[in-house]
Amino acid sequence: IRSDQKREFYSWIKNTYEDLLKDSCPNSIGNAKTNSLDQNDDFPANISNEEKENSFSDFVDISDEFEMQESYTINLGSQLKTTHNLRLIAANMLKFCSNVLTPHRIQTAMSLYSNSLSAIVLLADESLTSSATTKSDFAKMIMNSSENHFPELHSQFELIKADLNRLKPANEQNQKNGQNYRLKMGDVYITRHSNLSEAHVIFHIVADDSIRHAEINSRHPVILGLRNILKIAYIYDISNIYLPLLLLDKMYEDITIQWCLKRAELILKCVKGFMIEMSSLLSISDSENKTIQFVVPKGISQELFTALSSIFPTVFRLSNPLFLTKNDNI
Image (cartoon, rainbow, N blue to C red):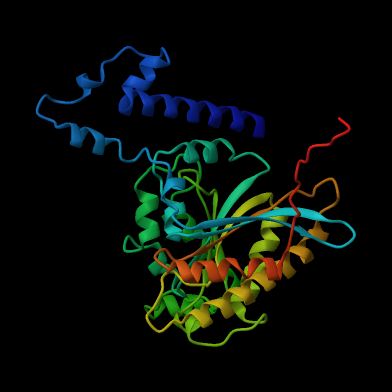
């Protein structure tokens, strides 16, 4: 059954990709000898060149939009070493949840049945129903394109509500009283998607405004929620995951550089410990490299980004680069 699903899904992706190119980039298709249409035939005569260019605005390379990013290769473990990739990015986390028509989306869709899945961690409030409404930016992005593989977002939330009713009967009484479904700080729920450009799985971790005011430690519920997320990632073949480094969606005026550095150091140390802990869940043959992408809110200063990037070498053991030197005996 799984093989049949793979073939059907691959066929659908291939046909969808060809249709997109045929409808939006006829010149490219012509070069590929898949059609011979003229690009000007798709536009009325009164359409300007600027409007034509805007019509292809969805076909963008989102990697070009990251003005600040830094990559690292690290080694974990003392006896049995494993190599992983880390990346620090200044961007809007929802950017990775977009459904823009990029090569990233095609690659993500084609790897849906692979052993290398991608995931994103989003901060959510404690009210499950509010996260499912059209007022949610995430929900709006999901509804911009059709979901042809997994249940619709609304249906997935209904299943989560059913699980809450089963696990917490008190929620039934709250529903009768007109109250929304409430989750606790650090709780995590999962939605699955096949129409996003950068992820197959979305981890929604519950956090409120107190996360930016209170002093947290390694036993904070949100930190323990991150531990559970990484555990699932190691068990279920999620090799690429985006994490909010500061546990913030955006920057606030009362947040200082020192606060950011302290929070980032805590998260990095906790993630390092979780990765070492979770690596024991895998056998040597099952071990694989993980890519952890730490995202900070877009718009931070270059000074803060440089300070954050300087923390990585102090927390992780970076791989030594190999230099090729000329040997006189050769």
